[in-house]
Image (cartoon, rainbow, N blue to C red; front, side, top):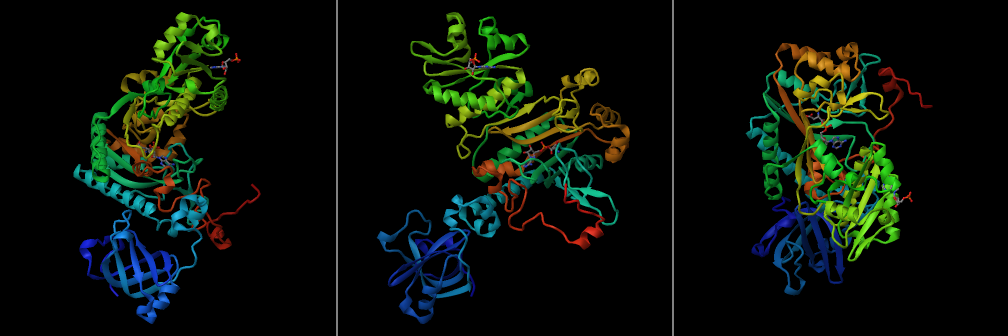
Length: 589
Ligand code: AMO
Ligand code: AMP
């Protein structure tokens, strides 16, 4: 019983051919005399017509088949009567008149209708992932992902990169998350860490003379999960020797262009826009600005200073800022809606949200009374506001004002219909000149903004000890539609500078030697200047697929709570394994 073609392949030109197809029963419809089966495989669906009276075998099958049974069907391709053609189906002009039907395997009643999986609770979809993945939309996503990795490999191979695998059982690579650890059986009390990225190995490969490396690499980060994060995810990881930022940018622009051309037949405009970190923050309130729409932030401190509106004056007197944006067309918001927006802004950290509606005959606002006609006119000019627009203001420290307005900007963009993932625009940009360092959450220690191996801007090295937050890094992010698609940097390649950097981060020489001694040693044996980048493959495919969650483009993802409902991992292990690993569980903590 040999399959002669896939379910989705049949057209009018095949009429008269005898064929064998195989797949899953998508639907069965009993029309009294005739039974129709939609048989499905990953290529699509073909309508099978069974005439039960033709044979005893056909009769029993016609009644026995159930959804998701696996069948092989032999028959003749026939043209459908005109009034029963289905224009929505590529095979809709034909049907297969069955001469024999074999049920290869029966299926239990599925826990959800495949057509309705979008409304099924996600843990159920993940538990029965093999059913979920049978759905055409998931098959499309998996195959899209395959085309993406294929195009990436092709293009990087063409550009002289070689693919090298680096270990999964390794030592901690600091990328800002917690490690997943693997206990060593042979060395009691010692642990491997799963890599947060291949960062240190790829640098070692540059010291090893590999010149251009890539890897489609699995990374593990035990961090708080969000829709665009998974504990286990995939990077397209690259590293180049004797390189500079320009080369890395144009190489990546070439890669993206090729990818979008090959996979979704779109041409990208290159070079991509570039913004410094400062510019991105000041104009968009984000280091990953969504450039599919304008709605820029404006600093209006100089215009409102001394107006007598205490909220603004106090912020400015306390070294804060007054910044705002034009929510174009939103003067239509009701008081209640404005109260809701204010509450939302407060949720993002603001103390309040001041607003001025621009109307046909002036302004409508609880704060307009504090502002002279001249100040109002200058605000309007700064915001380029027209009647019907809504000017929004946040007075606070610069960091809070930018963060809140950045969020508001995204809200306005979304309401303007500019942020639809399945929409057409692909707004790439590079964000450059990141600060080298930032304060950690409790404000006590300095942490690397990218990672500790990032090279500072040469001219800024003078401040590394005296004013470290002023030092810029030779680091960059690739941003697409407001999502951080990738990040990279030029690296430190001299032992002395790397040690200085560890010092600034509060890592003692002993600790640095213990954790990163191999890297410091390698730098002493002829390390070339090098740099690279890593792209989040899952995020890239998610955007290409127009999907809302990474879980739609990963075959076996984890849930928001970092478990796998299919296998029920993480699972308990038995006593003997614990003993072998020299582990005791203290379940009380
Ligand atoms: P970084 O930590 O910025 O850089 O990671 C690079 C890209 O990986 C993606 N990414 C994730 N995707 C899904 N789930 C996650 N939990 C997750 N975390 C990160 C993002 C991100 O931009 N070694 C450096 C790269 C380098 O310097 O070359 C690194 O890992 O898209
Ligand atoms: P109040 O004087 O507190 O009644 O506030 C007057 C208006 O200013 C209200 O609409 C508040 O939401 C808004 N507001 C209060 N604090 C701030 C702030 N820090 N930035 C912007 N608007 C604010």
